[in-house]
Image (cartoon, rainbow, N blue to C red; front, side, top):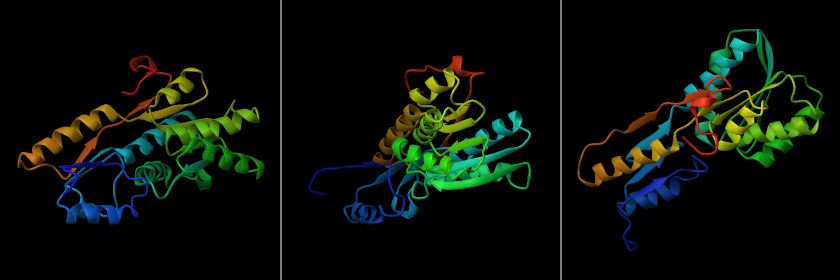
Length: 230
C-alpha cells in the first residue's frame, strides 16, 4: 500500500459499520488486529484481543445478588458496541430465571457520560422505581450517578460499571459506585503488539485472545492504583 502501513490495530466504534474499512484493508493486504471491542465480520481480522466482557457482566450481577435479596434493575446498554452487549448479556444470564431480580428498564445510553446522564434523567422522571443501575461501561455508570446525585437519590441504589477506570475507582472510594469490573488495557495493548510482531514474522497466532477481568469493590480497592489504569 502507498502509506507503507504494515499492520493496523482497530478498536471499532460501530462493530458492523466498520466493514467497508475492513474490506479495504484486506484488498491492500494490511493485517488488522482487533483490540478491545470485537468486529462483527471477524473473517477480516487476524486476531481479536479483548477483555472477558461476558464475565465482567457476570461479576457485577453476582456481586449484586450477594448484597440484595431482590432488586428492580435499570440496564444502560449500547447495542452497536459489542463489548458492552457482551457485558449486559453476562449480567442478564446470571439473573435469568430468578424472579427476585427484575429488569424494569433497558435502554441504550451511548456508552458516554453525557448521554447516560440524559437517559437516566428521563428514566427517573418516568417514575419507575429501581434499586440497581447496571452501566455498560464506567462513563455510563458515572452518567447515571450524576443524574441520581442531582436528585439526591444515590443513597440506596447500587450502581455498577465496567472498566476499572480512574474515575470509576475514585467513585468507589467515595462510596458512590458499588463496583466496576476492571479491564487491563495495558495488558491488552502489550499482547496486541506481541501478536502483530509474531504474525509479521510469519508465526502462527491465536485467533481469539481473552484477557481476564477483575471486579473492583470497596473490599479490594486497596489492591489497585486509583489514579491510573491497570
